[in-house]
Amino acid sequence: MTNLFERLSRERPTPVKTKIKQEDPAQRLLNWLQTWRKPTIRSADILIYGPRVVRNRKSTLDATEILVKHGWLIPQKTNQSNWRRWEIVREPTIRPTLAD
Image 1: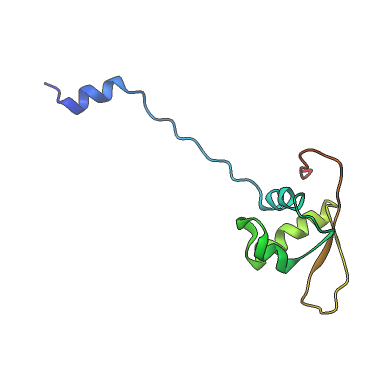
Image 2 (image 1 turned 90 degrees about the vertical axis):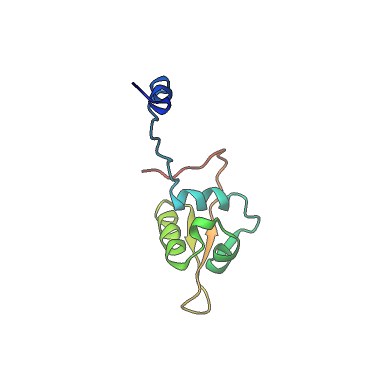
């Protein structure tokens, strides 16, 4: 004899595990930079106002290095060696992506 729970489980399909795709932090930063109104950005601005995924120093520097490598950011000289500033390259694209 089967109990209530066994009878109920027969009617249900087995659950399918789905993976939530995590977007790349550099791509999230690039998407956010398209809304930034100034022509340049500092690392402090990204740490304060940027996407939550890049709000620590290591992930900010990693994401900006990727964007520099792909040509979306151009490093600029600063007065102090521990400051970072970049010029944002704006291209007329609807959804900019990083090339693999």
